[in-house]
Length: 108
Image 1: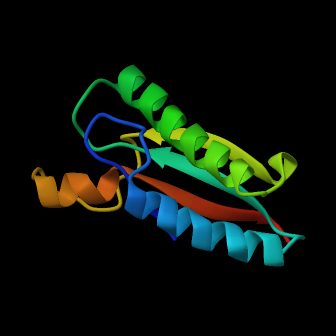
Image 2 (image 1 turned 90 degrees about the vertical axis):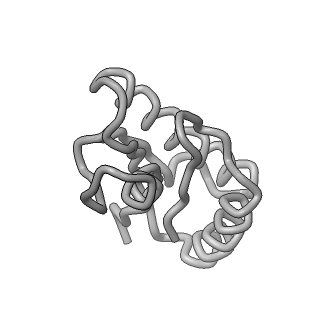
């Protein structure tokens, strides 16, 4: 499940941690699956700033999964900054859906 972030932060909310606990349980049960965590931002801010923020978000998610027992070598991270929005629009409703970390299965 996708993890969402507040504006201009990589801090995990309690809702995000709860979702990650479910994701970790699934990953531990599917031990042959490797994943990539994609960090994303909304359209506000510069390109370089958002690439760095997206990376911090992806790394925060990876660190939490590792703390929950998911093996480090099964998880990679990448940041797309604001380059791959999931929702188009110029308001908080759209922005809140774009501040996220997605999971992509890279190996089975």
